[in-house]
Structure formats: C-alpha cells, structure tokens
Length: 253
Image 1 (cartoon, rainbow, N blue to C red):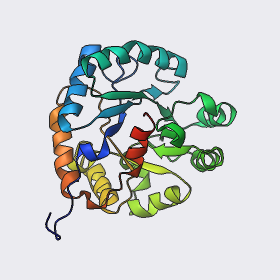
Image 2: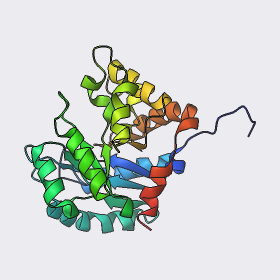
Image 3: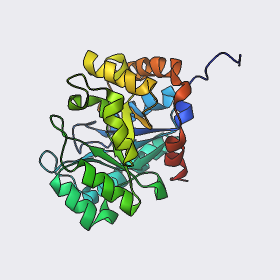
C-alpha cells in the first residue's frame, strides 16, 4: 500500500450490517423467507459476515413486542442458518422514541432488544417531523444504566439540518451526551434525495458516524444499492472507526 493512499473501507471490515428489516412478515420489511434469503445473499455478496435485524417496535404502526419478535426470529433464524451457514443473524429492534418508550426504558430496560452483547447497543428512531422532548432524558438514562443509545439514520431528520444549521453542530451535543450515530450507507449517494445526501456526506466526511446500516427493507435492487453506497464509502473511508462494528461481532461469539 503506497503511503499516500487511504485504506479502502469494505463490508468485510465491518463484519456485520447494523440495521436491516430482514425478519420476514413483521413490519414494512421483507415479506417472506425467500425474499429475506435474497437480501441476505446480496449482503453476503457484498462481503458481510452477518446482519443485525432491527424490526420496528412502534405501537401505533406495528403490533410487535419483544416476545413476538423473539418467537418469529426463533422460527426464521434456523432456516437462514441452514441456507447460509457462514452468515450470522442477530435480533435487535428499532424503537420509536416517544413518552411510552421513555417509560419502558426506565421501568423495564432488561426487556429491550439490544445488540453487541455487554455493549448493549439500543437502536432508537426519532420522529420524522420534530425533535422529541424525550431525546435528552433518554440519552441521560441510557448513560446511567450502561446502554449505548444509537440514533437511527440520523441524516433523515431534516429538522436537525434546516435553516442553515450545520449537521456537525446539531449532532455533536448528542455525541457528547453519549449517543452513537448510525447512518444508512445509501444516503450519501442520493437514496433519499439531494438534501439528505448533502447532510449524510457532511456527517461522513466529518467523522460523525459510528455505525453503518443498509436499512434493507426489500431484496429487489439490493445489490445495486449496496454497491452504489460502498463505492462512495470505500473511496472516502479512511476516517471511519470500525470499533462499534467489531463490538457487534464480538458480542455474538
């Protein structure tokens, strides 16, 4: 490797994809086992060794509970393992941050689905249209109980970047309060439009991303989307720290 060339980041460096909707038939993700297998094949082809499946726990939209997701995962995971013995699946969840979730975090944190073993990575989705009042209490409580709150696909919350706000200035206080930042790997190549693409690139180039996720919801076009995202990330990946992805894999061994 010539000294002036950056190391090229690849899915193999991450090991696990963090954030996907590959548990069939439980939310707006893949609908069937066969579709999930097709999506897993796309991840394997890209170089991943595993994926954290993070179905929604969002009471107003999906009737999922930790128990129902664990039961569905117990049905699906052995079939996936038989089909892909070299690819691991881990069950977690994507929680919507609202007052109900904050109460659960306080009253029954042991029931929440996390990844990364003792690192306890808890994926939390913010409301789309406004910054919730529960954000800072949630981060404080997570820090107090030894949970790492991961803010899901942060580039998609336009209110953090509107009216001339800098994405870096908006997100640094969250990081200082203990949040980890997850970005969807296709956001910097325009998957969600030019405004989100700009925010994602600023965050990525500013070294503000801790975890990467495909956020795959379907298998159709997965290889193309993954490829487009990695062509960009791989060409600018010298600053990304893979520590938290290593924690994901270590937590399952």
